[in-house]
Length: 419
Image 1: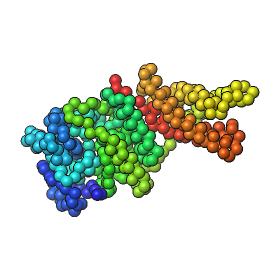
Image 2: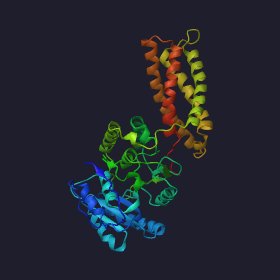
Image 3: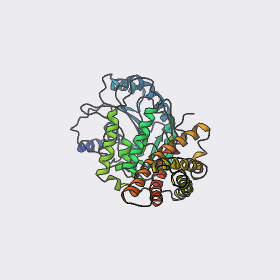
């Protein structure tokens, strides 16, 4: 099913409890929009499923923050997927003490992304936001995000991968899957995923005018990708936040979400929605030139070590072994120069040995993947096309330089670290 956020005339619509099903059409929302009396500044959507233990605390914190910021000129909309633990009923019970609270109970339709869109369709706000209902997104970050919207951003993303961001207690596998998903996204949809440091974030806000009348067809949990890929998003800002561990209830992260994420990327890619972005992928030329110069110094290191190890007049080692060692020495050389020069502005915000080591580990892992690509190109050119081994090595280095720059820019100097 495809959803479209209807244009909002000057009007308001009070949502208490609506029962949406799969046969709700856009004409129903057109009818709904005619009942509106006035717009509010901000509509925050909280998609929920079995969050009855967290909801009261979350609503209390959010209303205190937003009352102080907007002086009641906002709305808080709970969109619940008919939770067996009666989350929607808890929300209804809270409404008498929270005038800005609305509750939507959905039947016959489930899923976080569609819940967010249903909430936006019924919302009044000029700015539309989303936050998880499990308290893993710190509500206090909303204020910093709203300030960025005041400064003119079309989209503000709460990110774990910028200064002030991090995760509280993630294991290696969860970190690996998160970064792996981001890298995959950069390969499939660089013009979309590359615009933000945390495309997996479910905590963001967007200007209504940037997505109104743009059809949305989300899959899985990653609604932000849909907004970036199909909306008319101009200026993007990011605010750091520390992802918290769940206090009550059970995690809903499953392998199915990762499968849906990949399918979502492929669907966006295949339908050519990327071409609707206002801003195409922009390469930071100055930083790339610095990275290229550092890489050029690494070429001399690589070639020198490669000669000393592989040439018959010296050690005469095998091609692959010589190349691996030469490349790793060059990686160390390149990291040190990039940290001190190319990415110095980012590195200065991430001081300390622990963060330095993390940057090096990420840099090394990305470059190791590049070494694998380098080896494929080198052996292909040398063994199958008869190209001189030194020329083949230079060609391989040139190709891999672009690979290394792109992924290091997006991943290595974005350290997730909780203070």
